Length: 146
Image (cartoon, rainbow, N blue to C red; front, side, top):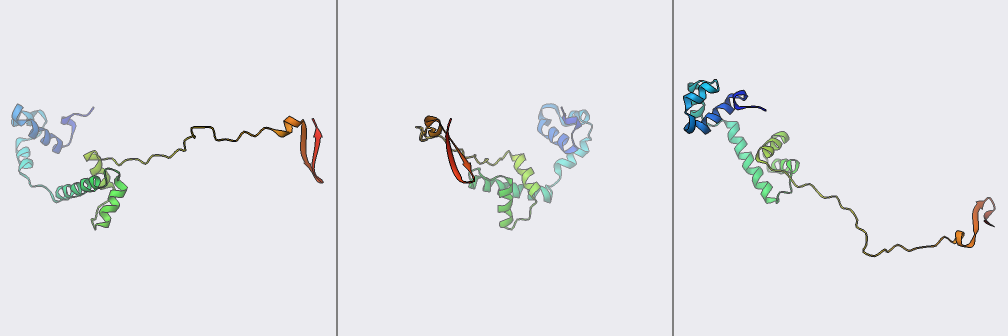
C-alpha cells in the first residue's frame, strides 16, 4: 500500500497543506523529506494553464453528465465536447470523469419474457399414433407400418 512519503512532491505538499494546523509545517516537511522553502514556493504558485483548462473541461463534463441524466459515458461526452468545438483528447475526458467518479449507465440487454400462459400449440405425433413410418424415396413419399 502506498503512503504519502512515497508519493510525488505535489502529493506530499498537498498532505502538508491539509495537516499543517495539526502538526506544523516544519515537522511535516522534515517527516516527508521536503524543504519548507519548497512547500512555500509550491503553495504560493499560481494555478497552471493546464490545471485551469482541466477545471474548465471538468465543469463542462459535469454539466453534460447532469444534462443527460448520467446516461452518457466518456465516449459520448467526448463526442459532445468535440461538437461544441472543444479540443480535448478522449483519454483526458476518461481521466477527468474517473477522478470525479462519473460513470455512464450501461444499457440493459433485452430478453424476451415467456407469456403467462403456455401459448404453444401441442401437436401430437401422427406417425406414432397411427403406427406409420413415412420416408421419402425417388418416387415420392412411401408409408409403411411400424
